[in-house]
Every structure is written in structure tokens, then in C-alpha cells.
Amino acid sequence: MGNTLKEILAQFRQSLADTYPPGEIGGMELAILDRLLNYSRVDAILHYDTEMPPFIAEKIKTIAERLLKHEPIQYILNDAYFYGYHFNVTPATLIPRPETAGLIDMIVDENSEADLRILDIGTGSGCIAVSLALAMKFANVSAIDISDEALAVARENARRLKARVRFIKADILSISAPAKPCYDIIVSNPPYIADSERTSMDSNVLNYEPHTALFVPDDDPLMFYRAIARYAHTALVPGGKLYLEINSRFPGETCRLLAAHGLTDARSLPDYRGLPRFVTATRR
Image: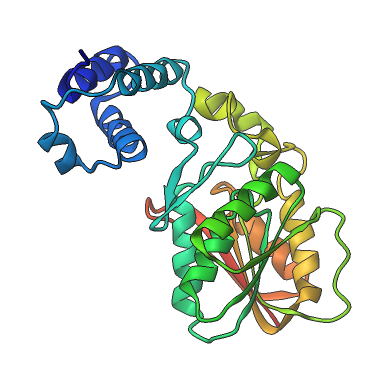
């Protein structure tokens, strides 16, 4: 006989109690129930006394063991909830953060026109490109990334969510500028964490998320922003807009760098926690 759902969840919580706070355990529990059983919180309550097949108990036990090693729940479940959608994620892609949703909100709120041409630089899981393709009217969205593995994940997310996005393998540090302006909007959440900041980061990030998508050298923390600014100055149409997620340590430096590359109206904006997290600029 199998254990009831209530018993299985009690064992799950108990096994993690010394490692995670109760609120985080509750969130992971809901994610597991949704992924394994397609249950909401209400569904779980209604089925508390239902005996579960042994394989469900074993799966949840295995998930708990991986969580005890600080592996992110999103990688364990191959799923991250972002901007109203479920995205596949793997260790080849960053896990989408709530802050990045603010970047998409900004773009959607400030650009109501149809048929805009958008480029997402360093797309990873495709969360920005796919969300914009679904949120904006008839947008023509392209996305680039240097990683074949990440592009495979992004393509699958676009296919599953029925978003029209063109994915291209390219390295922003060496990509050639287009012959003429071709984008109304360029957006990027590039690597921006300085190497010296590693010591303050959680082990679930350091040990599992792709370092090439996270870190930049201490002696050149804006290297990707410099390359993006150079590209955007040529690739954006006049009046076209650049939207960036940034390291909250460098808002002023990022704005000055964009201005030095011929972009105007550079300004930093806060995220939901009040930290300077975004920079926008316009091509003259």
C-alpha cells in the first residue's frame, strides 16, 4: 500500500526543515505538486488522504535528496515559471529571475506599436524573447546566444508556447554590425556579476548555474555592455530603444558608456526592490 499524499508531503517537509526556511519549502512543494500531479494547493488539500502510487513517493524523495545538495528546484523539475508561462530550463541556461520580468513590463508598457523588430542578445532559455513575442502585437522577434545547448532549450520553449522567434547562434563580443539599421528594440540581460562577487553568492547558483552566463572579470565588468552599445549604435533604427538589465553597482558607469557610444537619454531605473537594475537608452 502507498502512503497518502499528506504523509508524503510531511516527510518531504521534515527532510528539508534543517536546510530551507518553511516558506521556501512550501513554494517548492507547490512546484512539485504542479509538475508531478498537475495539482494546485486546493487540489492537494482535497487529495491529502488519497493513497499515492509508490513511484510518486519515490520521485518526491529523490527530489528532496537533490534539494539537500542545493540543486535548484527549477533544474530538478526542468521548469521555471516566468511572466505567466512555464519555461524549460537546464544547467545550460540561467534560471529566469523576477527582476527580469520588470524589464519585459517596461518594454511592453513603452512600446504599443505593432510589427516592431526586436532583438534579444544572450537569450539563454528564451524567456525574454518568447515573452515579448507573446505580449507584443505582431512583433518580429530574433534572439542570439553563443551556446548551442541554450539555443536548443530556447527553441523548444518557443515551439511549446507557440511563440514566433528566430534564433541565431552568435557571439555579441565578435558579431559584425548589420549593413543598415534593422531593429526597433534591442534588449539584453548579459553576464554582469564581477568575479569578486562570487563569495557572496548562494551555493545553488555557484554550483549549478552556467558561469559563462553569470560572471565577468573584475577589471572589465562592463565588457558585454560595451559590445552591445557598439552593436546597438549601428543596428537600431533612429529613435530605436535599448533596454538592459545591469549590475546594481554600476548604473552610472553603464549610462556613461552608452552615451560614449552615441546613444542618448540613457537612464537607470529600479527593480521591484528599489535597486538600480535597468538602463534604457535611445539611438539618435
